Amino acid sequence: MHITGTHPSHLRAFFTQALSLVSEMQNQPTSLDGLTGALKMNEDVVKRLDLEAHPMVVKVREHVKGGWRIKASRGSNARKPFTKVFLCKGLEQITVQIDGSILDHWR
Image (cartoon, rainbow, N blue to C red):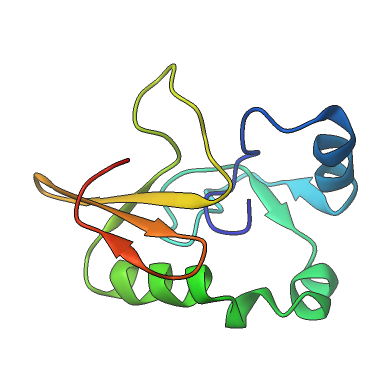
């Protein structure tokens, strides 16, 4: 959620409620690329969990600086995973996995 600004889909209700307690709705886009999402995690939670040092966050930030855009899911009715972030740049598509590794396609 820190990366995409949206809740992942298919989380158990307990975890969705926990995310709701540590986040707030915003009036501007909240994804790391500043283009989508409306949820922002509370700054104290981001700091306590050291999310900015998480391998997935680091790798997504690197790609966003290179002109990549974040997609919360592969399509309008597709899942929004919490272990992957989909990025696109023109027709190129990559997936950043939870460990910061990159797949050269969306999976």
